[in-house]
Image 1 (cartoon, helix red, strand yellow):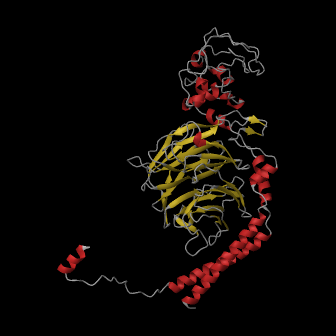
Image 2: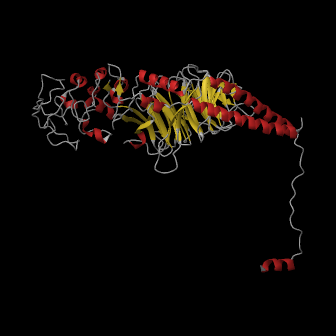
Image 3: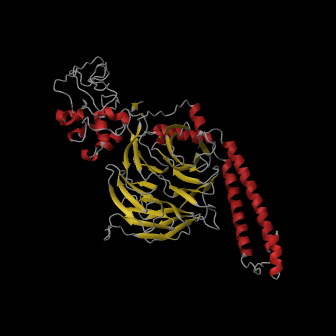
Length: 377
Length: 226
């Protein structure tokens, strides 16, 4: 077949794809008979209400000298690892605010960090395109630095996100600026599977965030600069299980809903959205109108343990607590006393859901917990 | 305008520059690249057709919304102000109290000392083993709590956890003559007419007058800064 013929086929195929996408979109729209807020309102649900001292900052973790970019809790709840522009990972005891490890990184341009399920290792990645693993029990060298115990090399772009597979200290998934996600075998340091890529059905721009399903660790979701989120099955790397459209900007953050059947997204378009993984429906858009025309970008999101609250950090310093059912902002952590003085860049909930940690460009991390009077219903 | 004339008179005219592109190399891989792109699109068409078929049998969004609402309402949440359980959620308090007192900062003081005060934080039963006031960290009026609204927390509460472990010198600032009005109903919230005859002061609490002990009626027995 000549190049000219191939080009003609290419044009025809592109048109068919666009037609099919449009039909799919219309069909989906016909199934969207309501959203969560509409449904909850029809059921007579009322929004959560917070008093001014209900959710309070009870710890400020000070120690980084640069912007905090990423944080992760251990599964046993009281330790946190944070990654900063200062080129260090710090492991904190969240109860005492004490630092247990300060790890100077070989490459200072770190973007992401994660605790292993057992809490014995931490992983980080960044502009060096490598995911580095540190064993916290390893002896330190003469200068007090912890050596890298494993380097996972293979990405052709920066490592934007990483997360250990739940209950497995030996497997980890990374998302990268090379448009792919990779499942790694940490024991061998080799790639087990690559999700997406040049000639695969995957993201067509940088992957910014990943989240592994806590209920089924074979499934994970990725968010990308191509304005989509994709659901992947680790057993089938060749194509995404489903692609979720709707956002009009980079998808900066993805996080599974606690029930494992939905996930949330946060985007440069200023919205958070909730998608259903089984049906592909976009169930809700969480959007707050601001005074100015330019919407603040969503940098990071997390769900409370029941799923009732969606906490989202924004580039303008706001940190909204959304009522997921009513789609209303019920609190802005960014406006409370003792809050951060800069953008909240990352956030996460402790394993038992009783504390929220936020990391900020003001170099600090803060821990928030419920401190009010609890009403018994 | 004059310069070109001068230049043309002094410098022999040169032919205008005519940059040339390098000779075009044959795109040896162009055909394969194009074929790969077509192949990708054809695969995409197959996927989309499959998805279109699968969408036919999908449930409407309202079913998903119902599932979410049911899930959310069925699960308790330690970050929420209300709980469906009959027992109060104590995780936060345990989280704060289940550790050595010297590691706690002001919030240890506040969580244990504000009972009965203006903030009306109520210490759950589960926290009463923590004995945070047995250390010297808390409850002295000179300690300022970090949250301005909580500044007046530092007086001796009647909470059970302090009763056993705290001497007056440790966490209370009341003169020995301080007479709490309702000795017979230490935990009776209905003791609204509780009067206190003491004249203790709360110097760290700007909102409280020099006699902070029940100059007004208070709903809690022996409320100090009401």
